[in-house]
Image 1 (spheres, rainbow, N blue to C red):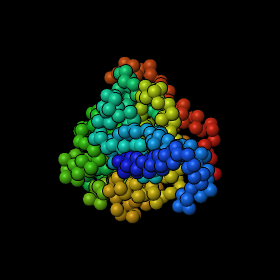
Image 2: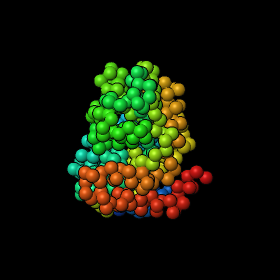
Image 3: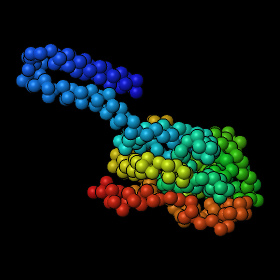
Image 4: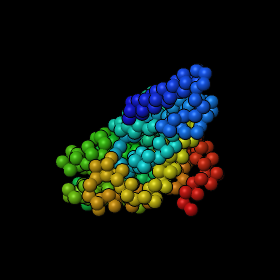
Length: 373
């Protein structure tokens, strides 16, 4: 597309240049006609037309390139095909990045590779949980939460059919995505809520992403795992059981969030503003346009069943806040959990993990409220 655009501009510029050249040659001779022929611009004096055509050439050759160059290219990584990251897909599908002058590449990177790529500088923006960014942040990495996509845990604890109660879970294998990631933290929380000790009463196994954990649960490689809705229904359809619904527990927790670096914010403040504005408009799209929302969910999560898409939309709508500020309360258990392992966690404050200046500025302007009037 970029090549076609370039050829179009160059071709248009050449045609304009030819016109200017012809008119300049005509003006060189004495007695050059004052007016054009009927096939030209009738009745317009050439001495006024020549500067006009020159201006047109300059616009075609430089002006259009300048407009195009304002589209900043960004790479945004995310690590799971779950509703926690659906806002990225929906904002992309709704062309809201482009509307705000951003050319965004949305990249799927397996699990904690998003964190690794962000820390190394391979990508400037990454979507991950508060649990994924907290440990490296406490150890000195330049990471900061820009937006909170989901501030509660929607997971279901799904178990093998022979497990009927929390007591039956004792001594069993619980699959998680990876240590330090949100699925592990969620598994620990829900096991504790059920009255068991996650350190002693169950064995946590690094199993992989949701699709891998689902398959492992069905084939008996693990006895339990946490799954996001509506993926958990596939396990139920295969004969598994939901032992606990974390969405009903209402535990504040920084689930999915948009993470960047203070270095990027300082270097690209205008791009940061346009990015935040794009996501705020993406949330408005979720709230007001179910069809675009479901189309994006279906595309990225490979859902075709209309009933499943309808349910996914309702879940996403209920978990998405209009003003996507990260949850300080939801960062507290994450930091607390890291205290025995990372000394800096003992004195860390949740506010040090977030930078909501751009979001608050947009909110104070009345823009967010204005979207819903």
